[in-house]
Image (cartoon, rainbow, N blue to C red; front, side):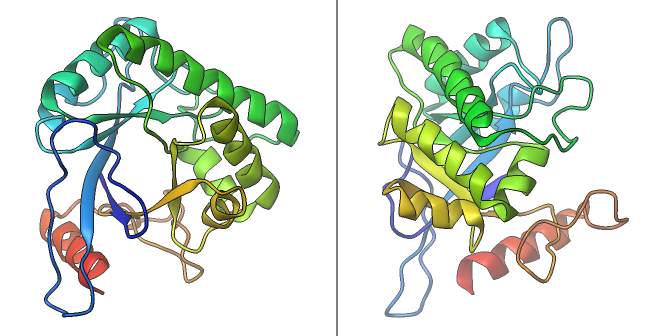
Length: 231
């Protein structure tokens, strides 16, 4: 589960408004929109408690059939998101089902742009069944990590978003190449913070391969989220 920290964009939710927490500093008000990655099962396999998580978040980032997900899973999660008042976001990844999108893939930026537009379009098709549209895009796994550091990848994702719907919010790590690309392309940008991951000194996510970088203690996760929000 991640917490999206939005300072300069409208909340992604098209249903109930996101939960709001206001800092006591007189000159600053922060709105936090909790989001989570979901729809990451495939065929007969379900991964994660999507129905339960949808009851406590406001934005769902749904796998689009490349690293995980399939048409049936996507449509089911979209329907439940609508019922719970959660906004519908695309969670595109590399075409890496076996590796769950966590393996780095070198691609020409044009090919990556096509891949992202393809996945957004697929989820938009399923969202149309419940009268909704994709409101944000949050890249998955290795793609997210690479785009945070690689300007060409970050811009390719941004161009795909802009081509499909320039009102879609580009969800990015603060200070990353994705944030820079989104602003350069004139897109809406939402800055996110992870409750269950540690960070490198450069502000990007520390590798899962390093022991201890995935936070599993709820108390530690809560402390990190509070720090992110108020500081």
